[in-house]
Amino acid sequence: AAAAAAPAAAAGAAGAFVALLVSRLLSKPRRLLDLTAESSDGRHSHGPSAHGGNSYNESGRLKVPRVMQQAQPLSPSKVQNSELVQKFVLTGGPCGGKTTALARLRQFLEDRGFRVFIAPEAATILWTNGMSVADMKSEADVLAFQIRLMQMQIFLEDCFCSLAERTGKKSVLLCDRGTMDGKAYCTLDTWQSVLSKQGFNETAIRDSRYNAVLHLTTAANGAEQFYTSENNITRSEMPEDARALDERLQLAWLGHPRHTVFINSKAGFEGKMASLIAEVSRLVGLPATGRKARKFLLNDMPSEQDFTNADTHA
Image (cartoon, rainbow, N blue to C red):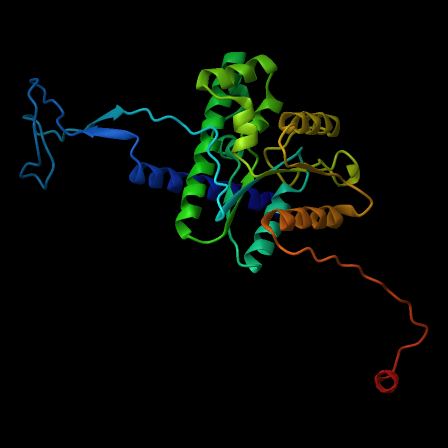
């Protein structure tokens, strides 16, 4: 069932991305339409004709507007850290619990009055919609991919931040991975090129974009019996590769002032989720409520009279 649900989730993420792209283009156009397309004889036609409001050339063909690119700079250090919006990035090695964590955090925060937005993982959108490892034939291909990946991630985050601000309500943006994750998937030289070709500064895209970085350690480190690739169609790492990748991701984010690593301990996965929720509660200013359960083994089933007598003595 999980395997069957994965493509649907990916399709939903792709649909969300397209919707966001359209909204971005409508609110802040990045392309200009030249409606004075030339006809076959080199003359220009202005305005609509009698053919239903469209322009046609002398041969009767509908003239297609030319598209002119208008470059707009990305905002590598943009962060919505106002009183209304906080942005947290969830990262970590494969099978660390990110998907479950996103769902748990969303429910937890919404139950307490926050608006919650989730910026999907840009890499998953690409890998599940046509991109293939076979396309990475050279280091130049890897460089081009990492640049486009970072641009998409920044766009998704900035779009959600802007929409969250417009609600006028206290909001949390949960980012499924962030700008620094790409550093763990390429060589240092390629990473430096990714930054330099876009005019980015590593400290800015690491420290200034996010209020906190929450790293969920891969199950391959400390919970090996639960490590699996069956619940993610884009996951292919063996346990030893997953551990190495997890370490590289920790190093990539090392230096962020609020970088927290959640390990796999004896408390199990639920303990890991509880620690994550407690940390997010602290970050958003919710009161800390410690919970401790005590269990007792009774020799006999108590009767209703036992409880009545207890109330009387109390």
